[in-house]
Length: 46
Image (tube, rainbow, N blue to C red; front, side, top):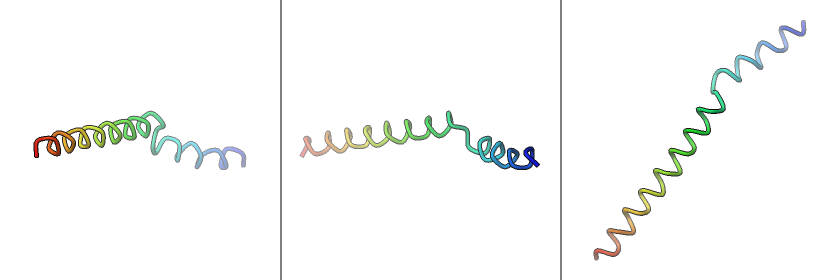
């Protein structure tokens, strides 16, 4: 029985690894900052 309880937890943990989630968040933040920088440059150009 304890093995049955641990198996779904392991499966959900392996489904989306923590490192991949952190990497996706970092890429999203960097992408937003880059887009804001480009928007700022276009705003200064006008």
